[in-house]
Image (cartoon, rainbow over all chains, first blue to last red; front, top):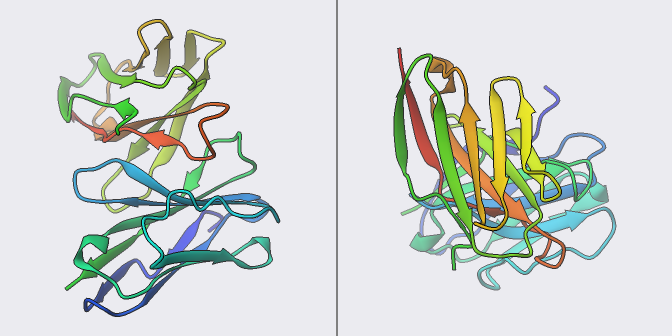
Length: 113
Length: 113
């Protein structure tokens, strides 16, 4: 389909392991966002990419979190040395530009044992 | 610090009646507001938006009202249908508030046939 695609849809891993989450945005969308949603909470902003500009990393909760966007398209979110509090649904969204509504993927449900 | 609040976690409405979902915000810099709808195990889907130059925006059965002085917006769904049963999030952003959208915690709407 032509929507935002995220993989894996579910990930279970042991505390201390590294995980990598992938996002394929809609073709042509220059803006890409990562959010996470913990149980009973709203969406928490993590990072924003716009074209070739330096990303806005202001929402990353710690230096264990990093993200990159290669070629202005696919993005990966990496969490190193995972902790139980990292358990959440990680959502990726893209938009034509900053001022347009975001289109979300279905998320990756991350569970840290 | 929750800058966008949805104080009703759930709402039940009879089919055919009006559903009113409410959202309050604290940041007077917000000038762009959106509503998203989310089904279980799916990402949020954009519904309708409004900018602060307007106080009402309508799209079919969905109308969003903005009261800037009260820092309050609401989503009206008329008539409500069983397929409208989902979690509804409001989100906001403004010039000078950063790149992220600030999301509320959501209201779960159940439309009873």
